[in-house]
Image 1 (cartoon, rainbow, N blue to C red):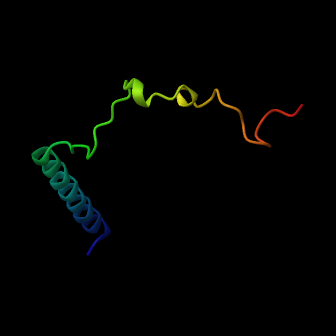
Image 2 (image 1 turned 180 degrees about the vertical axis):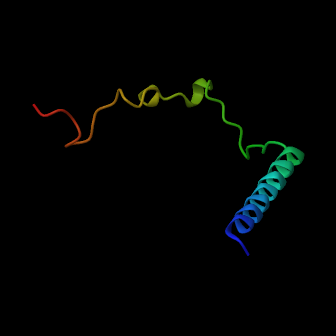
Length: 65
């Protein structure tokens, strides 16, 4: 077999696999989460974790002083 024939067969097979995966994805639709997460729930609000960059840094990870 010539190299061009092998490459063409590989690319056609790859396109068929991705086309099948796309088709299955269209038929099944998006997945549903097992648990609903509500970020606006005040009961579970933690202001310390609102901005991950605002907390203290661990030793050795801050600016040298």
